[in-house]
Image 1 (cartoon, rainbow, N blue to C red):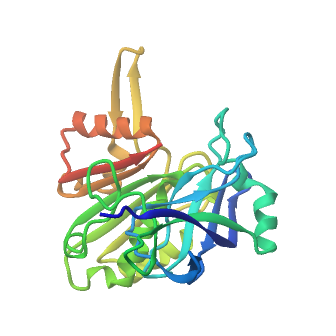
Image 2: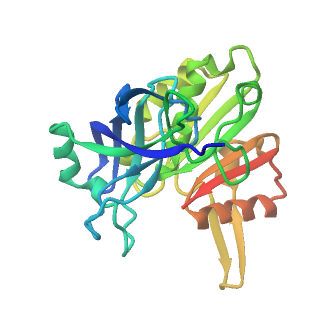
Length: 300
């Protein structure tokens, strides 16, 4: 059996939106309808599953080289085929290379002048098409690939997103919305998003509007941890609070999270954020003897 060949195709940078200058941006890339391989144009098919990531080659500010990096998609193939949207933050790590580049003026200038970023596609010589590469199709505890339609439409899912961890769940929401959240099915998707400041809220108004349009199927809980306006009517402070006893015992207070979603033991919990926060959430669930129907996460 012939193994699909890996190719990188230039994807035009068509939009850059800055949420928090120097910290967080949404970037939209557009792949062409066809790409020439071995002298013949082949169509590019986009069948990425919500919750998966594509492979691209952004520039590295430290190494001065183009690097292979995975980026979780925040829109869905059904909504905009071959238009790949992602949200990227600066990690501020000492050896960070590509993450700070996404926040630079260089990216904005490339967008203005029709610049591109190479995105990976798979080419199988036995077929007459190219397929946008995705990192996983497997539904397991270490991925956030959305379940099949006949499953998620009847599930009660609680998604906890820290900062840019909202990215895979935005793809969920857009995919579910395109299917009217399963119609008359009893499923419900609750999105809890925790960020530091109001300017870091991503797609905030659109999510509020969607929760009002589909209240029986979707709820949105934005939480601010460092600053908020006087008229802020949503969550404040950390939703998972860590308490220590002179450094000996660690207790995790999940009361703020439970206040938002009281029936965690009857829900499928999904998490996307940093690894220490995920460990704290898991410990808090254990200490509170709350066992969700399932738990899946992706961390950085």
